[in-house]
Length: 176
Image 1: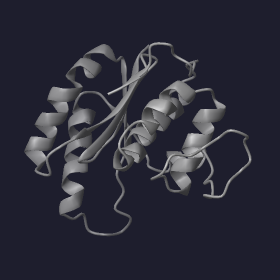
Image 2 (image 1 turned 60 degrees about the horizontal axis):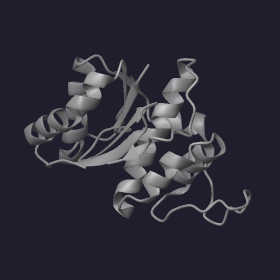
Image 3 (image 1 turned 90 degrees about the vertical axis):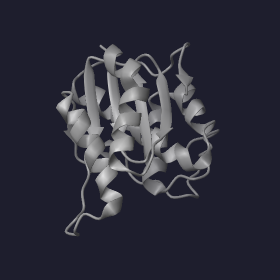
Image 4 (image 1 turned 90 degrees about the horizontal axis):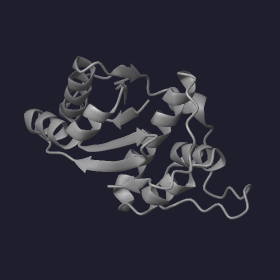
């Protein structure tokens, strides 16, 4: 059963598993343009997925500002299509933070542009056998890597919660 995971924002990360698509959409900063752009670009993936999960958004006691409007609108559109939100705290449950100088796995190299939380997600996916898709995340521009990685990690996390067995090493995996 195909699962589409989305990390919302003007740099929208997405991952479709087990089809093996992972990438980032660069959306406009205006709310209407961002929602229209997302719907247009993700339409084929939305139509081919049976499950849709989207990372929720927390403002942690602050008043939502202009930068919050696009992610909130994207989340709303995806929830209206039947998507389920997952709290941003999923990352803590899925993988521990990994310091930059971590050398615990021979041959493991983290790409540039990842914070300790993202390195934890990378390590977890690496150990779970998702190297083909991680290579595609690595091939993305540096500023897009965290968004694609979050979507891929969210897809894996959601598949584990749903009890679905999803293998990581797809021969036909591709990054867009």
